[in-house]
Amino acid sequence: MCYNNTMSDDKVKFDCIGVAVDIVIFNIIDNRLKVLLIKRAPKPENVWAIPGGFVRRGESLLTTAKRELDEETGVKDVYLEQLYTFGNPERDPRTRVVSVAYFALVNSEKLDIKTGSDAKDAAWRDIDEIPKLAFDHNKILDYSRQRLIWKLEYTNVAYSLLPRLFTLTELQRVYEAVVDRKLDKRNFRRKLLKTGLVKETTMTRPGAHRPAILHEFTSNKAEYISNPFGAFLKK
Amino acid sequence: MCYNNTMSDDKVKFDCIGVAVDIVIFNIIDNRLKVLLIKRAPKPENVWAIPGGFVRRGESLLTTAKRELDEETGVKDVYLEQLYTFGNPERDPRTRVVSVAYFALVNSEKLDIKTGSDAKDAAWRDIDEIPKLAFDHNKILDYSRQRLIWKLEYTNVAYSLLPRLFTLTELQRVYEAVVDRKLDKRNFRRKLLKTGLVKETTMTRPGAHRPAILHEFTSNKAEYISNPFGAFLKK
DNA sequence: TGAATAGTGTCTTTCAGACAATATGCC
DNA sequence: GGCATATTGTCTGAAAGACACTATTCA
Image 1 (tube, rainbow over the protein chains, first blue to last red):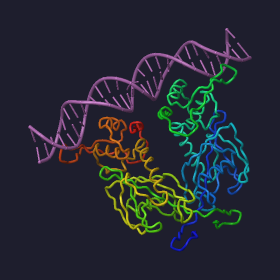
Image 2: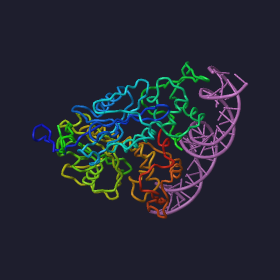
Image 3: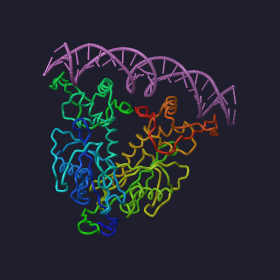
Image 4: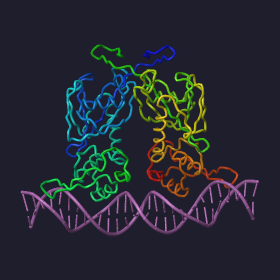
């Protein structure tokens, strides 16, 4: 049992439960959807897991998430939102821990994967090649995958997964990687233009063949879009 | 600081944080969307709040939510889902408490509002007449309102807010109460039929005028619907 | 000029949104 | 028959979904 320290008629008594924040960090590498996994140093040792740690005194949940994210990837100011809270009594065999899961979207432009004190190793793993993870982390990952699909359907967060300048084909590859399905190029572009999500620049991507026009997002703030992809991304 | 009780190389150290579950309980009364509020007996005293309590040893978050719901309303087997977790360090001035908010949908058919030991008083309050609540409960309520709208757009959970048999006008009133806007009767029914959400029965509702055909839901399991209201319920 | 990728338009069907008259039961 | 509520259909514009050819650059 825990108690707070204030005067007696304000006394609060409650069971002692650890509160942790775990983060699913998504990235697109080589047109594939990847997740950052770490190999745990603490128990359970040498098992893959998603990054996370306990909430510290005075930290909000979001602050904890940002700190963990910075420790693992060295990035700040990325897309980050709360996902779900997992609290089954047996989810951590060591002691009672409630995990508030967050999910983050980063792009490869200026990533810097560190190996923090908590982790022996870190690696980007393809979403379709996830090993058995510690605790209930596979469940958390399933959940975050669904959320990501939904986010691409109804918001503009795709900007978080790409560098500032990109081609329309690259953007389509992001959507295809997330929904795990080929999309029709003409319909995708028609739909995309209606959303007002992106605009052309005057630059092109030099390549082996016809150069593609580079685009940028009209907004780098997370928001709902006016003509969401909704049904378009569904089967 | 808290520690678990196992052997030393499994030792886990973490700050002591209370984990509570608070529940937003929605109901439709007289065609208006209502929320169950309680008047607190513990500090802060005599302030309205949404029902809730600490997670007990061995309880999952969902179990806690079900227990609280039963204590407050006497109902079981209602629609209940996790909403969001609120964890700002200052949200409870007594001590550090993280609140996992749930939201529940009940119907008036067999409600039994109790006054539990924690609450001096309980009342259904109109969603548009919510007083200043304890802690950050007003924020929780705002959040749950948004979630409810979304749920009606994309899932069949409306069945939770109505008795087994209902008229189409009554169902429309539920949607109107939630989105807080009048809907076109013909378009609503056309859209509704496409969803496959409801089916006719052979019974009618006796009344002062032309009787309406009673309908029932085709499914009483929460699920996404195939032709969601989506855009229809938006402005 | 051939290879590879970028970019573009039409047709059909379905859905959203606006709109008003008829049907039925009760008194 | 009058009243109150229940029930039903059409038209128009927008979006979804299927589908194939032309344009440009480089080697």
